[in-house]
Image (cartoon, rainbow, N blue to C red; front, side, top):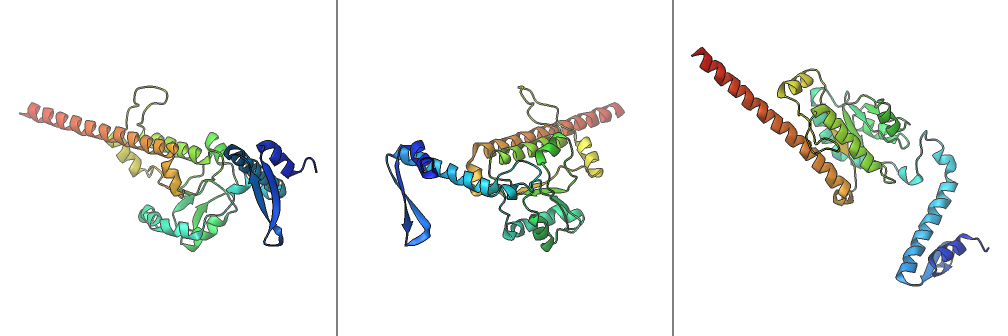
Length: 258
């Protein structure tokens, strides 16, 4: 028809586009695109948009099971092998208790299979609920956990939002990082405060991120590493300053005793 998907793709790209069966199969088609490089690129974008629109419409019932806005492409479960690869790290995190007691939190709900896969590997306490992670952050309702382990969705800016959350949590614990929007630095915690926090069990939460290798080349990942490095530097500098002050006080006390 005049308003068929093929007609809309032709109009959007300006290219000559035809579809023909491939290998004599009626359900296997090949798209033939003739035009400039720009027209071909526009055609690919239009075809991708049409395909996503078709699949979104087709899977509206499927997407309705989530309590938050999501996309079809975000719901491909992480394979068991990926969790097995990080199992030694989870065992290190669980060194103070046991793997069975470790509370692992995956904030992004797919279809709940992460619980089954981690249970098979010995992690019995997995928190992964059909909830809006960002709404929980805003309302300060993030579930209590010992370790965050997740494969963040690929769509939108989920990875960037997750990294921002991790930095904020690390900053909240350590108390020292570049001040937001200013040129100064917030005071870093003293060694005594960190010792007290450890004694009370309020340790910073470890995090394990199952992300594709190409993410390491992104600017948001590099910014994430820079933020963590700056945070660590502020903590180390504060510890060095406190130890130096303690030595000076001890020297003064010894001098007074003499």
